[in-house]
Structure formats: C-alpha cells, structure tokens
Image 1 (cartoon, rainbow, N blue to C red):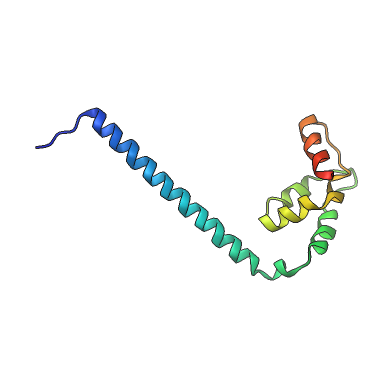
Image 2 (cartoon, one colour):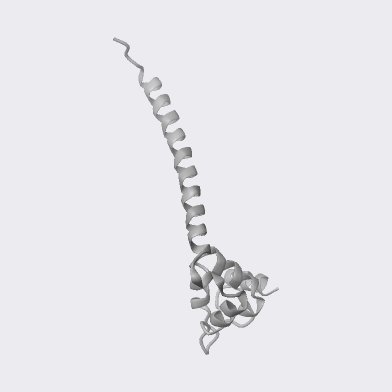
Amino acid sequence: MDTKSPDDIRQYVASETESRLKTLDTLQDEVVALRQLHNSVAPISRLPPEVFCSIFEYLRDDNGNIADIIYATHVCKQWRNIALDAAKLWTTFYINNIEVASTFLARSR
C-alpha cells in the first residue's frame, strides 16, 4: 500500500486547490462576459448616452447629494461608463471626506 507523507498530501492539496481556483476564475470571467452580452441586447441599452445622462442628473437631490448617481454606476458596466464619462454629473456635490472629494474632482475633469 502506497502511503503518502503529510508533506506530499499538503503539496497535492495546494496544487489541486490552485488548479481549481484558476478554473473558477475562468468560469467567472465567462459568466461576466455572458451577462454583458445579455445586457447589451436589453431594450434599455438602445438609448443614447445623452438620455442616460439626463436621467442621472435627476438622481442628484437639491442639496447636491449624488449618492443615487453613485448607485447608478453600480448597475452595469454601460451605466458606469456613461456616468463616469459625463463630467457634468461630478461638478456639483456635497461631500465631507477629502479622499472622496479628490475622486470626484478627478472625474469632473
């Protein structure tokens, strides 16, 4: 009977774990690509970026709070790109955190 040492077993487990993690990463990338393809054919995706920008402007409240605009950037890659490319969305805001302010200033170009 072939018995393995604890070191051999640990090495085997580490190797198998690494292999499976790589496979999992590949599968996750494929799922992301499929979701992006699915989103790209949704009827809302046919709207021009200017329409999205107009809608996003309504997400800012009267005090300059743009939390809802930030939430919109988390919906999908298309919305994120449109919002981040629209400098006018990032020019007026209320903020009390210097790190966040720096990010917003960079986005406002």
